[in-house]
Length: 445
Image 1 (cartoon, rainbow, N blue to C red):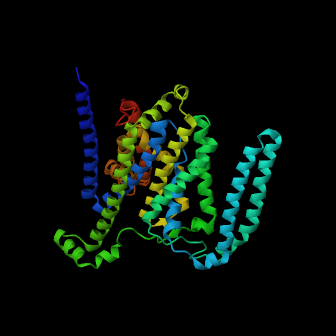
Image 2: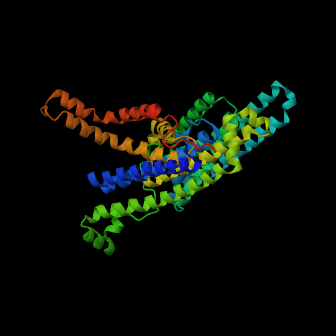
Image 3: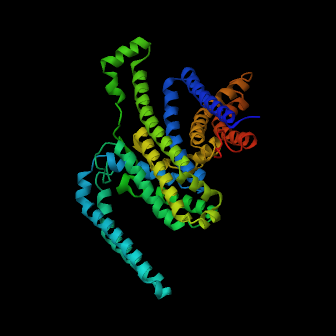
């Protein structure tokens, strides 16, 4: 009969084996393709793992279905622009004061609407019309003031600028600001929608995330819309600067590689170091929270809301708390991704990449287990990237006896890119069959 200590030991050995297989996969890619490719995949895996932690604390801890991951990641990316890019002086002169006054009008309108809602409860149906009247008045005042300012800003050198720019601060600060942006949006969304049933909540969060991305695509004055913002500052050295340093040239000669390739590897290692630090801090914080009375309370609410409510726990307030916390982590990851890319591209925020793929990572890794979510983030993104070259190799092997001009061979080689979706489907089927609770299931304490 196995004792609890034996079960714990077996579980630890199994987890170490799974992470060890990941290390082997990255080493294999580095040796078979290039270390640049391997490190590029590693950096994106680290960011994906941080996103999965944010979703896991919502779904795995509290049972909240958040399909708005895309919107919160986009807000994190926006923070990278507003914090790190230099301000466009001409744009601020053309419409900056009006934008600031418009922000003040928004805040005053919100305060007045909340005040009206709290003070007119005895007026019945008139309460609704008073709130609508206050909101519409604020909206029309805002548009009258801001529309000319926006038009003036977007007309200033639209090929290179056409937006207000940022604050010119270090881009690492945008990681914190991205979390604040996402947390603020999550608070507003949560106050309005967390009372909904889980399926309605999922639809509401998905719809709101689409609205966020739609606004970012069309409000050019904010971050150039679909024209993108390029050239974000880096928290790590540039390759061209490393290539002219003596120690990089000496190291390239020692290891027998090209100095350009070595400089790219060094930059990717610097990014990986920053991302690992953030992931380690969040993992430690979330593991501590999971083992705390707060973590036990959240799991109790997840398992039986009625019983938790009967014990005096404010279920909606706790749901809002964890919803804001998880969204803040997603916002941090979104800012990190923009930092890695060096550009902000609103059209790249798609539900497949930034919502459903993240959910697959959580499910495959094991919802409710932080280490499982991290593992799922690594595995899914690794195979998401590598399934296409592997599919091309597989098709090449299968069609080797055929002539190069054979229509079947040409069709199969051209269809190798579709192996990505087939690989994801196959992984999900295998997980549902052999590990329905994930590779590293939640530990029942």
